Amino acid sequence: MAQPLVVSDVDRAAPTRPGTVPTRTRVARPGAARARRLFGRSLLHVLAIVVGVLLMVPFAWAVISSLKPVEEIRLLPPHFWPSQFRWSNYADVWTSTRFTRWAFNSVLITVLATIGTITSASAAGFAFARFRFPGRNLLFGLTLATLLLPQEVTLIPTYLLFFKLGWLNTYLPLIVPSWLGGGAFFIFLFRQFFMTLPIDLDEAARSTAPTTSRSWPGSCSPSPCRWWPPPRSSPSSATGTASCSP
Image 1 (tube, rainbow, N blue to C red):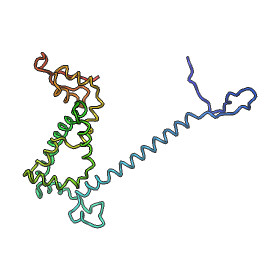
Image 2: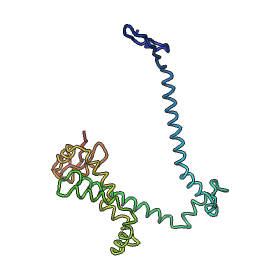
Image 3: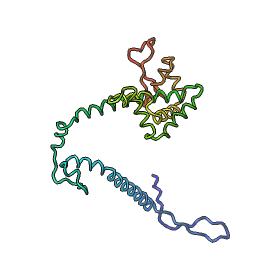
């Protein structure tokens, strides 16, 4: 039975040429290397824990402040720990304010804007990545150039546009722009993502339906298996098929 190789902690003579003075080299201890590696990992874990605790301070402050009396929230200098915990604040927020309506507005706008951004930005990014048409690079460059404009520059023109359209005090300014591209940054992200996909994936998607509209949603799906209904002429149209990327 073969015995494990054990490296001893002794000085070993390095091979020398004739006529030269032999030098001695020290073999590093496996235990010392393991200890240094363990110390480095422990230091990284401690650093990560400290940074995580610091990042959790604002969240802890928000939770503790929600249990304070109203007069203690405005104290200067602020007190981190409340004099008394008022759990009734969570019940009062539903009766003293229109919190239900605020929550409904947040959920409705978030869901519709997210769906619109994913749909429109992925379509625009797919067009910039796959289609060949005159002025494609110019249009993509102009799209990226809009990222250089500060929000303060477009604030007043955007307000005047919504005023002329009669969209003030409505949900439309918060939802409709998401369905018209979703922003240059998201178009750029989707375009770069589609550039990493092989053309063979589009050809595989067109094998079930010879239209570009079928290959776009199949490619933009993040799942390894991209489900998309086959054409009606296929015998399996009632159940659907899955085209998996290699």
